[in-house]
Image (cartoon, rainbow, N blue to C red; front, side, top):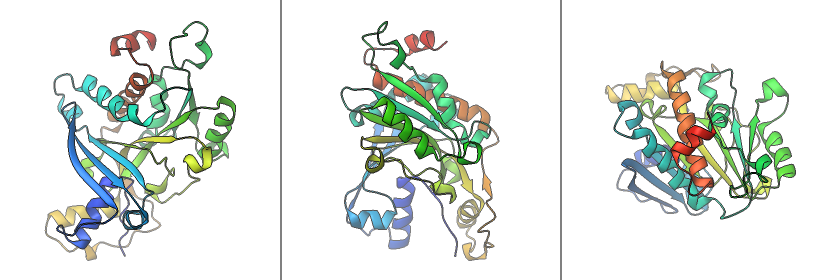
Length: 293
């Protein structure tokens, strides 16, 4: 049986519709298309237990921004992307109180380095409250991977949260997609937190409100697709039989774009700047360029 891996709610909803029939309405899930700063935006809301079961994701809001225009180098595309991310985050963040931003992943593995690299573009202000009294208190954490630290990412974040006592936690991580077209071209923002590694079959401890006691907002970008899932999509597009795909479970094979270094670097900056704009009202991208230089 082919395992289709995806961390994206929009893809999980699409998969459900493919199996049930495009005209079938899924009770417990609301989905609609919008536009933000010139980018296509899909809003998926999982409303109840039926929706959770159907899509395999906790109830909440999942916002997926199509940023493929970044790679077409459209006019003002970086500025528009950062503003769009800020606009998605602002309604999910509490109006006041300190915020802890955690970059999850392995900085030594490019496809998993989105979170750590985001921290390079995060305006950390918790230690500067006396000299920057008008800025919101923000702390940053680079939560390493279990294989390097012997600690779960959730343990790192919980420990930091116990000390910082934030009003909210924002976690940034690399995701897995079902579609090759979504690699490094979608940004998902959710108010449900996340389970690190779930898209690649490496489930870790959950980072969510139940575990941390405060709202947990997740921001992620799909940087990998499993070989099985990619083969299914390619065969389907070519009119082939997906049942002929060999069973590769347990092989741990994933694909990522050849330009992954450049794309992760730029997406980390988009997300970091978007978070800064959402957390520090009145600041401009030009200010961030100077402060983070």
